[in-house]
Image (cartoon, rainbow, N blue to C red; front, top):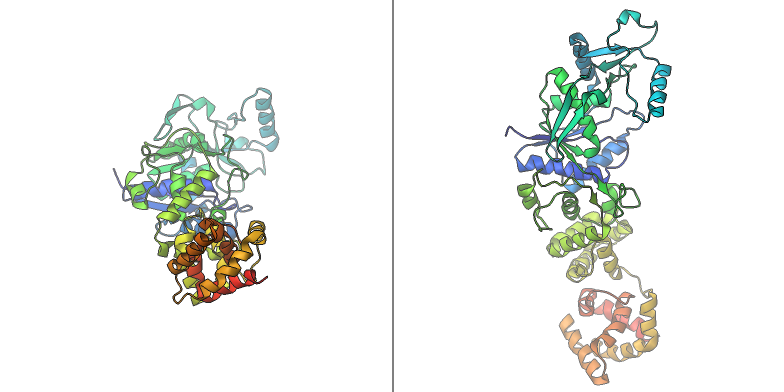
Length: 473
């Protein structure tokens, strides 16, 4: 195989949505698998909808996902002169022609097709006419002189052999009347000039592949390998929308997902390797191929993504997860406020709490929420369950435990556990019945990491102060 070159070519009209992220991932993995090159092209020819902010959002999303590309991102709009040069060549060879059909004529074709229940197709009325017959003062569009007989065959690496009757493919516009190139032309010229060998994209572009193949052939250029991957649907099987999770990649970062987990989840939406569910980056690169991409649409499942993210969090080293949390703070709800409070002592507390916190969390948002007790001002605000625990006998237990804990010569989780267990046995209660009031007093909640871990992380002074706040009411 010659060197593989793939590309991701988003339109900067909004965020990098989750379907686009998966397309980029498949292209990146395929290039990495074969030691090839992954390129980025920004298809910004729609000047009204393309924005600099959207470009930055796309670049930021790709970087966060860890999908690095070679070289600079290429602007399609900046290549308009090259696109026009190619059209001039096509006019010179007869592969393209000028069309002077008016807006009214095109609308008439559209109405006729609608009445017949067919898609609109240009009827070729200027295909063989003498340009001398052109109406004065009318700027023409330039159309491809498409083949009218036979078939255009797409040998797709995912969809298989797909055949299009040429009579169903009309003479598409290459250059608009204002001289600007169309998407169909620009994509072909750019992919050729970038030496792209494999075009991996959504299967909504399958018909485009037939039209673009004809442009390649008209120019005498090699046609790239096509691979059209199924789209992502919602859990109900309908086209993915915002209510299903069709958010920008930036939103998934704000929801507390890890890049590695999101990559793993996205690649499993449409590609599989037996029953294996979790992959390292190295394993994905070594295993990914187009032959294992299915033809059916995949269904997005938030619960599965959340579970996968939790798996990745638990599998991480505590140091790495702590760093991931700190790095994510600017993007998490309430994160910037927590970041402002992170002096050296608080950082040490959060790091010490990570082992207990990650067992209960599935996202960084939940991890941060679980660590909230470390930053809570005294006296702690109580959630409803915690308040109920304290109001129904909890404070009485705390009042007895407080001096016993104060008397500990050494402050540690194990030493505190010995005291609490001895007290529980003495009063004939299960450990949980005593631990719950402690948890409420220390965290303001009825759930938390292990209570003796909490005592250790908070330290003697803060722990005793919080217990005293509730025991002495």
